[in-house]
Length: 114
Image 1 (cartoon, rainbow, N blue to C red):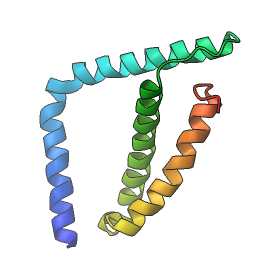
Image 2 (image 1 turned 135 degrees about the vertical axis):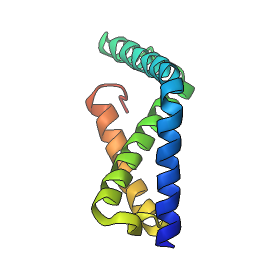
Image 3 (image 1 turned 120 degrees about the vertical axis):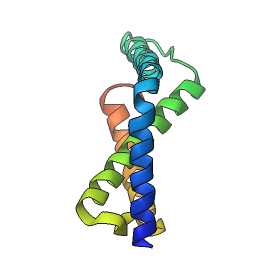
Image 4 (image 1 turned 120 degrees about the horizontal axis):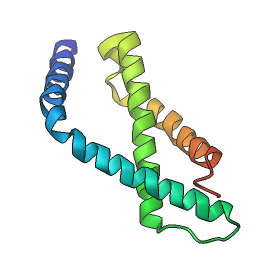
């Protein structure tokens, strides 16, 4: 099983290195769009009003940051312990840690007010 996981990670890494030169402009454009929307919502909320962007945009930002925190935890744990962390139990633990981290982070920067 460890060999399968290592081969899969190796293939994913090589695919990322192959595709990244072609996809980085789109990733950068999407990141600028999301960061711009986040800045707009933070400014609208700090201006004293209750105007905010759509719930769909808020869910997208929340899920993106949840994914970022999850991947950071997974990559760090994979770097430390190796392929042992590619398991349902570890994914449950990383998800349980990523969920409150996302909420704390988005409240701390002023994006979420609830």
